[in-house]
Image 1: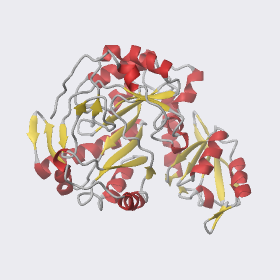
Image 2: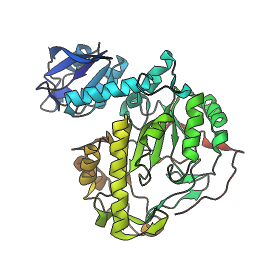
Image 3: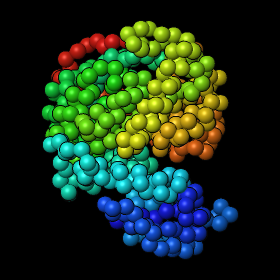
Image 4: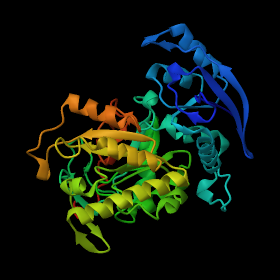
Length: 415
């Protein structure tokens, strides 16, 4: 397969698509990758003005490639490339490292890797098109937002930390994370997924996002194992606070998880203790900066492990004015160094211990995104999904229709 890289020196991917004066073309196969040619390009963006004909020419120039590595790209160019079937990976870094990592990803999604294949990992060739996570996951591909659906299975009720802004709840009304109408059993997950696909054929992602933490108990692993066996072509996604993530990436891979979201609200323990009131670690309840330090260390270690395993990693950060709003660049920089590929800033919803704090203004959100965007591509279309969400974000919601009548538990564990 052919890949294009916006690497002006042939070594480091660093250019915006609209400013790329050339693209290096390489051929990727099972044995490695080799340089084919350098294609000169007339840059479509000059002094902030866009030449539409030059933009189309740039797209046509690499239209025979299957993937593009580029530091940044506009939504219009992304859509034009996707129409030609080009997967856009907005990553910066050394070309050889990006290509080697992508080869690892390709081997794993096709089942072509050294460890013995399990039945759940034998994927039909025609199903592989669904495994392009950067294209088919609504939280990783801005260009596909509004066209791809996701299903959240609310199987994880327990949580191992308590954030000062978090108020988990069981109800059918609130549109925010940490909320579900109730919990379901792992053994019901396959039949629920089948009905969800009937209600919303656009679903490409099966996720577990609570309403507690997906790694605070065993239900997520059991659920993913069953879903991956029944629907290997669907993307499996997990959301976690990261405290229990270290050491679990390989096991998550084995049950089909290919993308993960880790919520990191600080990389400084003294800021972290202002966000998290307590954690449960080693069977003990811990508080203060010491607890925050353990949480941060585990989060960054877990992101590194997941990235090395071949997963796409997104980091969520709750933007809290006066607490971490001037710290988000440090978070993004640390997460990027550990292998994260996308960052999602979520405005604080004032509640629980932070009920009297103000939500961030639009200006504060944009300033934080601008700072964090120096290190990680910013996701700007978060729908504040519930833990039992079903449908296309921002377009339709089938959760009540799907989950009615299958509730089996009315309470869940607070840390």
